[in-house]
Amino acid sequence: MPQIGCIHARTLVDHFQTAEQIFKASIRDLERIEGIGTIRAKKIKGFAAFNDVEDEMLFINKYKIEPIFITSLNYPQRLLNCYDPPTILYYRGNANLNASRIVAIIGTRSLTDYGKQITEELVRELATEQAMIVSGLAFGVDGVAHKNCLKNNIATVGVLAHGLDTIYPAQHAGLAREMIKNNGGLLTEFGSNTKPDKHNFPSRNRIVAGMSDAVIVVESGIKGGSMVTAELANSYNRDVFAVPGKINDAKSAGCNYLIRNNKAILLAEVGQVAQTLGWTDVKKSLSRPKELFLHLNPDERLIVDLLNGMSHTSIDELNLKTGLSSSAVAAAILNLELQQVVKTLPGKMYCLY
Image (cartoon, rainbow, N blue to C red; front, side, top):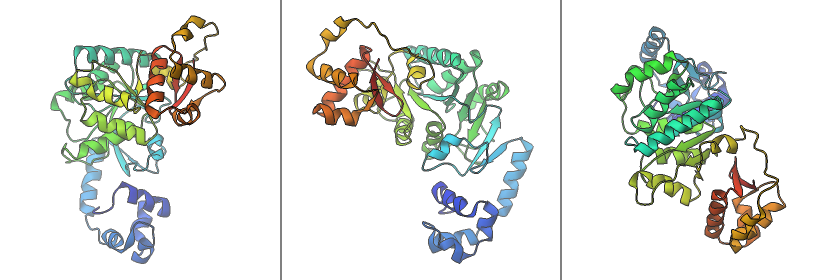
């Protein structure tokens, strides 16, 4: 509906509970809703495209698509914690969209052999944790992630930037069918006859980020959809991991940027995701060699001494209590992570191993 986006729609649903009650409401009742006003109230009352709605319902029934309204129990509940959840989703598949463990694996369409290897290893590791993998069904990292989920018998969901009457890219039509057949699925907020236009992809990316516990960027240039998804995940307070690459490799420039600017956790080993998210029982080492601490510089020693008396703390608190600049703290934390002295916890918190 013109001028009624997902944020306004959620406001209306929260107030009226059902779509039926929204359409039954008077202009006066509608315009009193915060953010709606007279113009949007008139758009709602003037809506007359119910024939299009009937056509969409016929399409849904014909192809056994599940429409999931924002109030449905089947709606991906993690999305409700985002400020802009889709009002309705269209779903084909059997995967549980509210699985206890969901991770997004994303990256460039033209991945390197190294990126392919890392993606394969990540999927194998996450399969042991019984996590569901979400991605965008694109070429490159997305496709490798989905294909390896099938190899490892792990549920995977592709989030689309178009309607379910087509598959983009067309070369992944067979992959999409196999995903549905093997307890995975396809998910989109776009109705039938919606083409994969450029402006649809950022909307798709927010679903990938919002429905996941964490987002892993395997390889990415400094610009592109993966960077948009990572930024969205940060805005939703999701953990973001990035695989570091060579400093002169354009396909790792985005990952290196995210790590350097504290927008992603440096992914040093595939098991780190499960540890950070608290999925594995990681026992603290009680016999860490004391010689390790002899190699700490003054900034690192200061942070270790501070963390030694705390269960965990945030980077902001470290900045405040150490008196160091934010860049100095970030650099020290990075080195301590690489030496496995400090580990990152969910919510951008830090503690000693």
